Image (cartoon, rainbow, N blue to C red; front, side):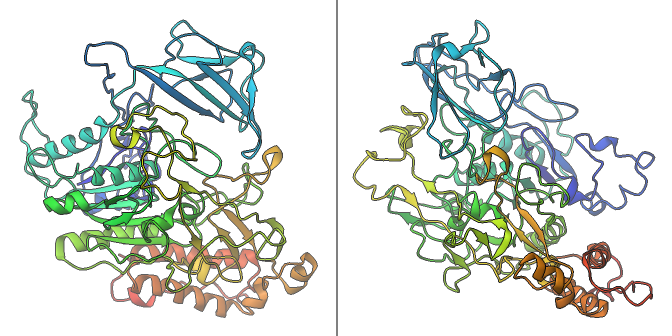
Length: 603
């Protein structure tokens, strides 16, 4: 069975499953409506049952078959209302903004509620006077500006006294108990039959971003052991979660938030332990690891930890493979492998003809072919004991994991049209008050970055983290390198910078796509230090052979399946011609087959 905890209520399985038209209602994907798509599916054609369930509290109205949960409001033991410090980070437009938790009162006294505004992250926040904002209704569930609307991408921060916290950590139990029911039970507590009773022999998870961070904490907190002591998930495909958890098992948590280099930096998701291995953290004084609890009960899942370069630049991805001091590479945990998809932006492939809010075109590198191969590797590991490919991440030991290079002349690898500032997210140990890390209840929210800390064991507020080293083109050296990097036509980065009035602030999850010039003359005229396409590939035959070899190496190393090679090969040949690779002298483009796949057929 494939289980996906939805991302903010939405299913994200379509790319891995090769069913782009599936949407939130897989049952709508009929042969009549979408001929051939079912037969071409990845999971269903292999016999997987695909399952989703709600785990995240009160996402509001959701379209179609999306999934949410309704979790209870906590009260004091005597039933009275709980209040405490609430915090909102607002970068979205609109006449009003709905608060995650209602305000305890409608007071606009600066002692109980403060709204600030700035444009750049490094600007000094300016207090909006009490007359400049108001609650929108008697229940104090939303705020508005008294003149105009919130400006998109400007930064507003609202600190106030909130009430009625929900027990969001129950979402972990919802995931655990639902999957345990499907795997082990014949009926639920109300005698509702289990529709999969006796059918489920293994469960693997498929995640993307927020749910991957959720399952990081799920495993760390011991939820992969159900209430009867059984293992819940056999394997996890963790795409773009890396070294982070989720802002969930704390009072006033907001699970939809995700820290990046310009947004939501003061919501806790990066909390030790970052790695699966057990390590000592001198900042907190703790010894812990994500797999410590499940290791004690023999309920650890096998994990394919797969993430993008963006997780290094705008999160703290390197802490998944180093100790908390950032001085030592960690050996693999026996139940997990780590893979960087080199130079990839967060999430799916970007549109290489659009810049969005960024200074450069968006990074079009695609993860789905590698995800499918790693899924097969995970299944063979689980069912046959065949070890997966070795981890592929940058390391301190070989010099491929480095501090962000200094800004220098402000150009990225010397490209005159690409600004580089060295911007990278810093991983802090926040101060939410003297008892937060023991109780999960903040008395300071938003947190502060400076001492005093809870006790004298704290010897520094920052966890050192690093980024992948790049080659002379600006592409990552370590990790799983797609043919777009080994036979490049462009520079790809996992980070980007904003344009417009927000220029040089981080462009969050977006990366960059910076094509090479087609000819030497164009390169010289542009002042571009990178060799042109035609300098690299004087003939089509040379380019074609290099592409074929790159794809073949991925297949040999079990990072691409034969069934995906034909489409990738055809796409890359066309991309080369469009970028300036000399045409094949009027001959048709050969429809070659990857050598490693010749004896296996298309599948």
